[in-house]
Image (cartoon, rainbow, N blue to C red):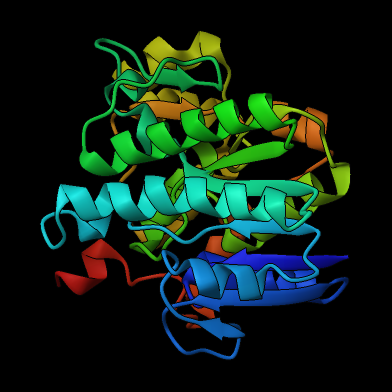
Length: 295
């Protein structure tokens, strides 16, 4: 099987490329020269896409403008890259005989719907997005357009909406692994599971770390988070106390990835303990403690 990964020089795209390359013939496309970019150029270049698609069975599309680009590029550019290029890639992929597309999306697109008043939000694939930014709007639009292409042309598309997956202060990352964060290696594994599962039609999955919480905890998570943590994650509480970190008073949302775990056979492996290990070993994946950096 030959797989094309777009955005393969990016942090997540590179992780997916390397993970898949252990088992498959993988090529990457990115506008930044990199050891994982076999094709270098603009994702909007049709000629380049056609070259990259030769002999490809599956496309993993991670290339996009992201939240940090807001304010630096125009809204038009966001639509051209995140929507227009995605549609064109899907159409060219179909014409080239590609059998499946996996689209890397984001849980951020749920926007205001993630944080209802008076309780923590419990976010599933059934939650109706209430987007905040141009980034959110374009990712929603891209998903919807891919669904239409899937239905019109019988082209299987799996959307993976990944939660936060970038370096942050250690105590923040530790907490996020319980409710709204994911390790980049788990993201890569989810893409492999989606490819190997090969679902027909259009499918959408949230990709986030395992949570010890349940929907019934949402009000208490918002008003008395510490009590829930002590009951549901005492090991995390012990780590915070040992290191002099302050437990949060409130958590505002939980991303539920149980559908992906059940239907894709995907199991997130890297919980909060792994964040601590990376931090203690000095990996750049985790930023210093807020408390330490402000002292």
